[in-house]
Length: 143
Image (cartoon, rainbow, N blue to C red; front, side, top):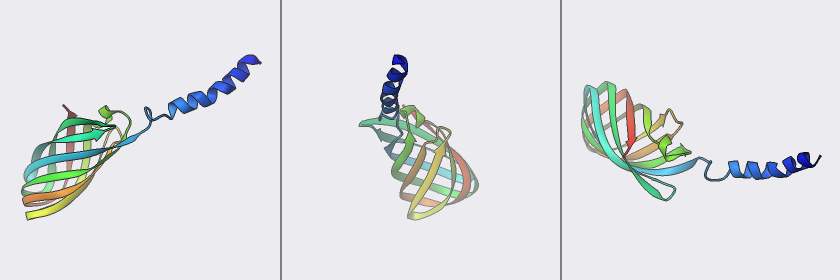
């Protein structure tokens, strides 16, 4: 009887501990500069910073694309990374499906998702000459 009562009293404490911010998903802020070139098959790379729970984490990004694409561009993207439980969830392979373009200057935006459930929503200016409607993959590695 005493053990049953003790278990009932402990249950709210356990639930509270599991739902604390240490275990909850959080949103981070992302800034990245990405340069790419393409003619049907494209490739690119860049560097950025993830600001998450009061700390800054540097990362590198590399990507490939296949589809209708031609040209070269530089992108300065900024946005959010949601669904992060641990900073290591941010690294991984992101699926990219997008379309966009730039003629001297333009704007772009993209939504990406990785195998850890992290969703990036990025937008910002781009410079260069490019047209793209393609499928691709972006890989992010923390430094």
